[in-house]
Amino acid sequence: MSQPDDGTSEQNPLIFPFRPLSSRRFLCTPDKLLALVAGALCTLCASALGEESANPMTTKESVEHVARLRVFFGHQSVGGNIIDALKAYLPVFDVTENQAASRNVSFFHALVGQNTQPLTKLSAFEAALDSLEARQTIDVAMVKFCYVDFDSTTDVDGLIDAYTATLRKLQARHPKTTFVHITAPLTIVQGGMRGWLKSRFGAGAWGEKENVKREAFNQRIRSTFKGEPIFDLAALEATLPDGRLDTYRAGEANVPRLRADFTDDGGHLNGAGRAALATALVRFLATVPIRGE
Image 1 (tube, rainbow, N blue to C red):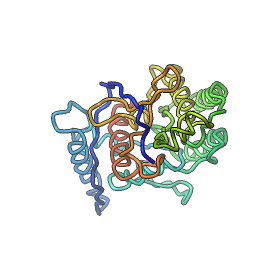
Image 2 (image 1 turned 120 degrees about the horizontal axis):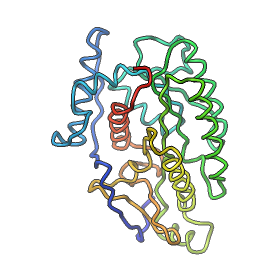
Image 3 (image 1 turned 135 degrees about the vertical axis):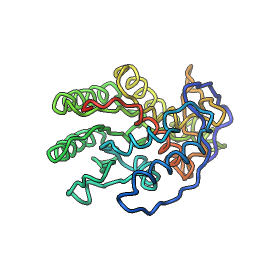
Image 4 (image 1 turned 135 degrees about the horizontal axis):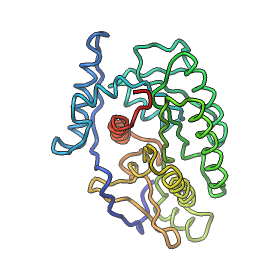
């Protein structure tokens, strides 16, 4: 689907632009794993951001730090897109496939709950983390909603309340774990004549009203958890190569949308999107304070 012609862009100086990256896999022995992880991620970050960028992920020390973290990520499909890119650079372990958590793995993940039912994701994330923590300490834990969890009728206040209650409960139960909050992913907005007609005379172009709800949720995440680690997935998805936010008009507001070159189907991440978001996530994790240290 093409983008609508009435979109606007806003400058976002806090997010670095990303360019498409090719994905390579590295075969290694356990004793050389850390060195290869460091080299691979340093190369990836340099390619995506440029060596001139003063970013912690351009240093070998920061990459090795990320490789030593024990991270748990609860997600569905867009998170799976990011995991696919991470697998080439970090040891990734699906706890839903094998419960025997290995000490050599740094990044655990699991599909949690059901799409379109975000509350099930919170309960499944809670159960999975409790089970994993029973065997070892997790340094960083995070759960992500999917774009399909939001429609024009979503109760953003109710969802934020449920998310906040779950996270506060988990923070009290797992005091050595740092919890990262993630903004909800976006989609493009249907363009062309069909999108215009649906926007003007119908129920709205695909993605138009849904992104409004996603952005309302994301703004609540940013304000409610200000001062805590937030991986702003939505902002990264909407940031254009020149650093501006790709937005469209909805009423009196400019609402961010997924940049078109990061997706092939309007919602999931393609190769370029996966590489950019995986790079951003690893760079972000290098800056997260670890409670157990």
